[in-house]
Length: 243
Length: 305
Image (cartoon, rainbow over all chains, first blue to last red; front, side, top):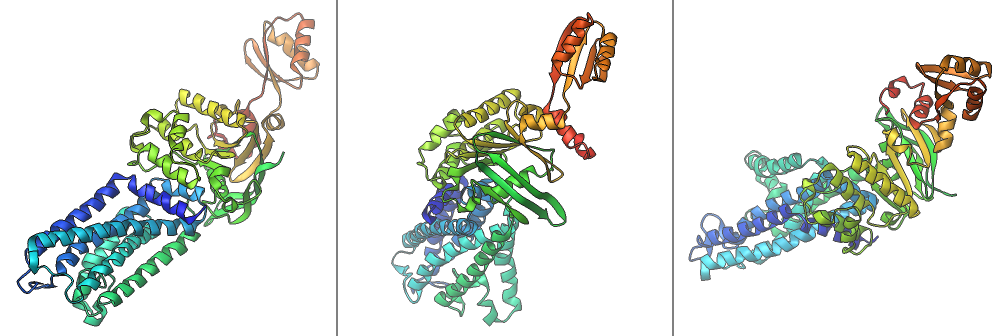
């Protein structure tokens, strides 16, 4: 059985669940609406007051997309486990690492498509309300936009990896969102700024535009974090009983 | 005939608990083999070990000579239903078979054929979460059959089914056998298995108690009993004892149960004693044989049947 078959089966699983599709569409709509709202705030110098250049019109709504895809990643993993689908998959394809790798790859592929559409929606939204003042490619805008093509799929894989590790939907979503939205927010005020820049969710998304690490190094750090989580998920899954 | 499933010294521990202890048995190709044992005896664990879902602590579980992961497309070798939790409740039945078809290397349009085969074509577009237990059982079977497997492994398939569902399931298992498939089916409902299985593997308290042909198992573990209803049980009882038979019980005023004599010998004795026989039958049952085989495990006997 080829990896393509495993990947194709995972894609079929994704596109045949309405809740996954609704999550994806909601993320795209939020990106578009967010872009439109932010676009209206762009001043004559092409900046968003208090936030930075007009690339924020795209990257800030994409922050929501990152979290939505994080949750989707968890659902892709735990929904399979909770429903018994994962066990059937494991009987039909008893090569654990390949199955999990296919799941991660499918999650990333799906997230990539959603990211492209969401970026386009945010751009169009910003363009509608910001008009000629909206110039997202100024400065490091291009790089920041392009990093989302990697960061969002990676966030989805992170969600799937944490879902596989905890094997519990509520637990995995809570752990990720509490870390991303609460723990990191507190750490910003309690640890040195040089350390803050290395916090997982401060390395990508809108935060990457404002922190010292920058777009590409930030993406590199995030890739490392996701790699560790995915590697741990694969390692433990290989050793666990799936009964 | 070559064994299709073979366990060799199969042992599984979960921490201090021993779920399967040094199990060795073989399942004949093309036969229906019942895997019998009370709840918690180790049946499901043994099946999971065959399917590669659990890792054995020691020993090996082979399907047609190889562990499951060595088959290039395992779904063509074995299809399994371990429980009815087989599909995401929000996914349509047809889609649940489609992704499985992809893993089995089968065209996705075969999903409709399979659902038709298990009687679910009318609800193919419905979400599995709305299915009854019997419908989920059928859906699980459709998924298990997607690769047209040589071996079908079912864990407690009769559980929760109504009489009509049990009859349907038994008919389907016989159909599998007629198609040349090997069927390995676990159950703690011995009465449902008695007229179905060719061979047996019996497990109790994690240990294999017996394996082989069902009739041989029954004969080995249950002494033949002849049940007689006649017009003079006292006289016939005396004649039977005199001929070397043993009265097991005087079931009621007119019924005797006897061991140590064949039914035709009992009939001859009655005839020569001038006793009218109303009913004479040989009694052997899987349940009694099972109870006998696991007699030393007193706490199990109460659960079976």
